[in-house]
Amino acid sequence: MINGLKKWRLFTLMAALIFFLAGCGREEISTLIPAGGVAQDQFNLLLLSSAVMLFVIIVVTIVYVLAITKFRRSKLGDEMIPEQVEGSAKLEFLWTAIPIVLIIIIAIPTVYQTFDLADTRTMDVEAEDGSMTNLTVNVVAKLYWWEFEYPEQGIVTAQELVVPTDQRVYFNVVSADVKHSFWIPSIGGKIDANPENTNTFYLTFDQESSELEDGVFYGKCAELCGPSHALMDFKVKTMNAEDFEQWVTAMQEEPTSPSDELAQTGEQLFTEKTCIGCHATSGVGTTGGVGPNLATFGDRNRVAGILEHNEENLKAWIQDPQQFKPGNQMPDPSSYNNGEPLTEQELDALAAYLMSLSVEQ
Image (cartoon, rainbow, N blue to C red; front, side):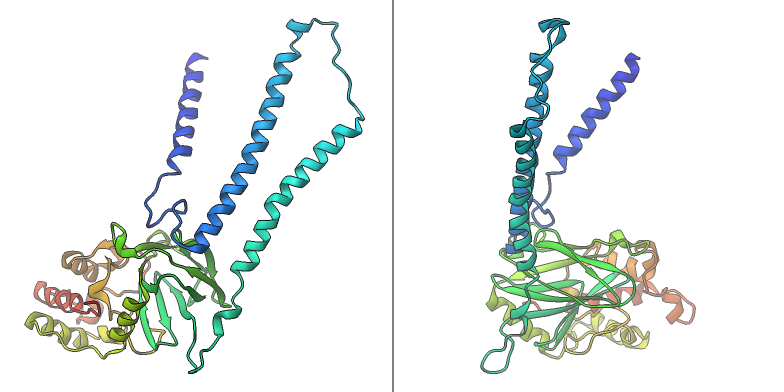
């Protein structure tokens, strides 16, 4: 019996620790450290709901404690009968009205924010010159990576979303295969990426990601989509409007061949080994590639969204992509290299070329 109580004490302690640790997090991925207007509104709703629930818990606890202390049999005796309040109109009104009031307190801001966050009427507003006044990004979720198209700017990128701060950014979210879910925890709530229809919403970004430890916010797929669901990450770079315009201009320029001799060899191999058949290396073009657009590969924060961004990890990924992301569509090198694995020299050259693909100064 004593051993059993000790186990329950340990369980209770662990549960309490999990509760407190749930509030810990890094600002680039924590919902409790909002970095955008939408995230802040949702966080405020969370605080309001928590305050109402805490109020209910405190009131119930007080009533419970008073009941078991004031009316103890050992204190009042066996013959004591408390005042009977059955049928009291006053009490029945109170315990009916109070829950209704609490629900209204939660419901009004929740309904307002729900409709406000779904309001995309200004998405297609045009300026006098015919250009869009707001930035729109088409998001396509794929197994297991993300594609981002900027239709007004005519550019496409993958795995790293780049957006300006201090303005609304509208998103058209869809899936190319199975159901996914687009989520940037620090910026706002998730939205489903369905293969059948496009979901539209907006987010705002208040903080430049260069101020963060990793230089990016983290995005996730929040819908179980396959064996590598947990590895379906993307990164978000936020910058001021001027820097964003410079990034767009750099993306719109046609890529130039690298000056490094090893990277030039890698560029040739990239074409010869038919990598170019799946991966575009220019930010200007159409969407729908089998593999991610690599125009900004040298600027990325991670290899394949999960590995530290260096040449060794890149070569390991090219050699055996299934080891890192089971179920992804990247083929084994032997399938496009006459049944033979790539040599160390070929891997060095490909890695050098891919790392040279950069648009950031």
